[in-house]
Length: 143
Length: 143
DNA sequence: TCTTAAATATGATTTTTATCATATTATTAT
DNA sequence: ATAATAATATGATAAAAATCATATTTAAGA
Ligand code: FES
Ligand code: FES
Image 1 (cartoon, rainbow over the protein chains, first blue to last red):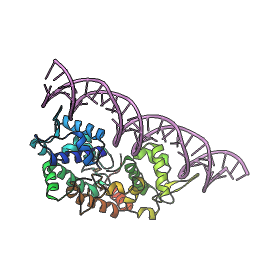
Image 2 (spheres, rainbow over the protein chains, first blue to last red):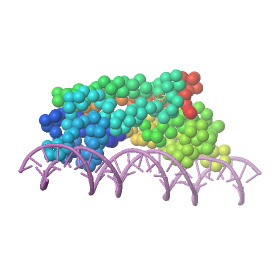
Image 3 (cartoon, chains in turn blue, orange, yellow, brown):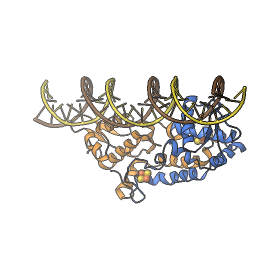
């Protein structure tokens, strides 16, 4: 479903949504431990996310990563797009390339409705919304 | 979602369901081309499936792979279990191991219903049923 | 019984993904 | 200016998945 990297990225972004803002940036070493991901690994992912404007960062002393309000307003799927590419979520379950509603593969009929729903939710739900779920105790981050 | 190997396996099994039976076995070289999978690769997968009694086989001249009626009555998920392991489909989307309905991860609430539905369908639908969809023209196999 | 045709077992190679490491650049504060 | 700090760019290594190759075993037919 999701690559390891995407999972890590989602965890990191939600962690930032919960604990950071323009005035409170967080260094990679203070992210990796609570979300339980190796520092060098998450560092690389955070750089990719920053380059893609999913998250924000500044370097030097007092620097670190954080989410602006604009960042938080983005849908979850943007994270996945950057790390895994959208195709991973949208392509045919059997990897038949000429497949569509008119010419569905054998799994299409039993899976595609659910998958479409998942996609819709990933496109609809924002980082902010998910982080608020956590804040309210409706869901839990790590460990 | 599914590994490459699982996708190949599903294609091969459905192909066998459509074109083989006890009296009409099919050799690996006659399977690999129509389903568009490298011969050596699908050979290995077919052997795994055979060992796990998902499909049947006999060796020597006139030998080959085929599906018995018993084989065909099995649910699709059995194929995936053998190749990928069930955990791939059931484990937490964020790989948090102590996760459950009581302590859902942030993605759980927006994805788990759909995923459960997919699981149910994979457990419910048999190889035979899916192959009949193809036979009736309700779905299409390769290319 | 011997040859041939097929799957089976086993393992090598390649590619992709995951993980680790470090030199460089930008920013802050002295 | 300069020193210290933190992200950035880049690339190396390790592990896993995908792919390829082949010697061995079993069954059929001559
Ligand atoms: S998932 Fe294969 S055709 Fe849609
Ligand atoms: S998918 Fe993560 S808790 Fe269910």
